Amino acid sequence: MNNPPEKILVIRNDKLGDFMLSYPSFALLKRAMPECETFALVPGYTREMAEACPWIDHVIIDPGKDSGLTGLRTLISNFRSHSIEAAITLFSTTRIGFALMAAGIPYRLAPATKAAQIFYNHKLTQRRSRSEKPEYEYNMDLIRYFLRAHQCNTDEIIQPPYLQFDEREVKNLKQVFCKVYQLDFARPIIFIHPGSGGSANNLSLEQYRQLAVSLAEQIPVNIVISAGPGELPYAEQLATRLGDLPHTIYHSTEGLKRFAQHIQFANAFISGSTGPLHIAGALNTPTAAFYPRRRSATALRWQTLNSEDKRLAFSPPQSANEHDMSAIDVKAAVNEIYNKFLRP
Image (cartoon, rainbow, N blue to C red; front, side):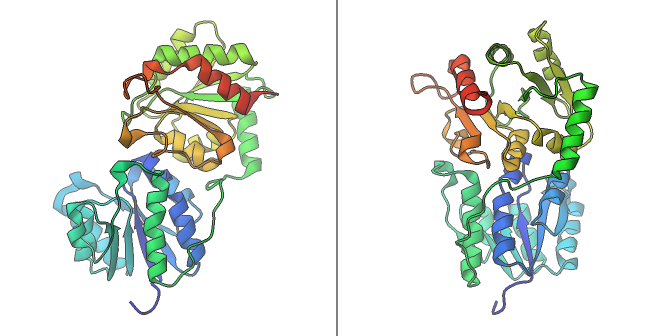
């Protein structure tokens, strides 16, 4: 390709957290090539967060592997209708690789680490399984490779937040939230999100109870137990364990964007390695995250996007099994959370 492409598709069509970690990639691409049109291929349930990304111009919905041949044909047709000139696949699958080739997209780039690479004419060798750096950096390496191939600047450093909603709107939302749930507006609002979506090991409900109780002993706070779709029973179980400790259950039923706006006004967001945690990271909301020590799921690999002064990560000690989340000292973690985020 002699001229830089004008219509560029970036693919990250797996889980919510994975997609949020692609925000810096879109930022780098759009700032280096401001005249290009950027397209994102995402599953339907992450659509709102793709539409909220300031560096994405168009969103294409992946009908998913369960849609069979009909869905595959629809996908190929969508690619053709948009006259996509280049595709950068951050997460590679055979189905998507075939669709890109079948659509006749001239420039197709993906990691050279799966069988799907046969469908791409440009490849970058990556060793993500070694977890030697954050996932968002692996994503950005592909964007840098693409930009260098088109003689574009790759040196710009993009600082958080990567996602930000109107401050006045969010402040009004916080006021309504505090009024509805009878919270003290002046106290810090701490979101504790015990659900995990099954993507990684998590603290037990008893550990989350200890965490909430220990936080309340350190400083007067508003404890908010958040729950996404399908997570309400888990949140209710934690609430029952809290007994007389004042708390609120916030069940997100108005979509991911509304959930994200609530996370923006939180003073801290505490959870395992899950999608809402990475929304909080993109917003530069302070986060305290709990990870197993397993190589593919480490705190380094799944580091949040917020600045260093706004993130904490906790894992089992070296003396414990890498999966043993019960070995994490919750009270010690609370002390760090308090000292870093909440100390007056």
